Image (cartoon, rainbow over the protein chains, first blue to last red):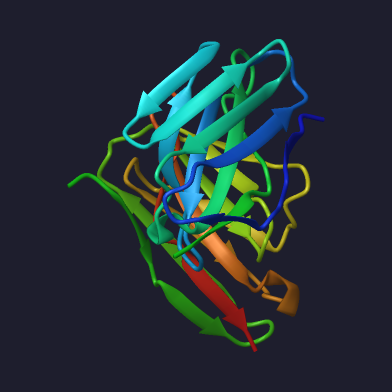
Length: 112
Length: 112
């Protein structure tokens, strides 16, 4: 059973701070990692994908992957109230099923 | 813009009254998925199509059926909705060999 674990939160940070969201996964064969943002009542939106160990930056977002420790994180710099949402981590394995396993998400609240 | 479209956005049905949800895509993606998502939970995969090959998750109730008449369209039929089927239904697509999923806006189903 492949598992993806996230702290449900809420994680509350002040505007302008760095928000750090973490995700751990159980399948050592996992190769592809994704972060989706989901606003309340809306559908998930892909914001980051990462495939190799290390950091990947896109604007204010940085995804960090450590396969040895089986975790992936998302850093949001200069957090804005508009970043308040649930962030879903999804993990996929190469070979066999190409379908990612989703975590339950971490709720982020950025307060002014 | 290429996109995934779901109709209707909101659906109210009565207990036991069949309902059909639709999804269309202009991304020309081979794979289409149907998810059910309840509040504060991870999206739960119901079905997916790899081209015309239909794949049913083992724990998807028989009450749920799906059709994909062509590459662009996919339907979710709920034959006899129960109160427990009230949820957001999400359609997603992905390209051949890719794991990134692109979601439609979802259909919020209410069962009265």
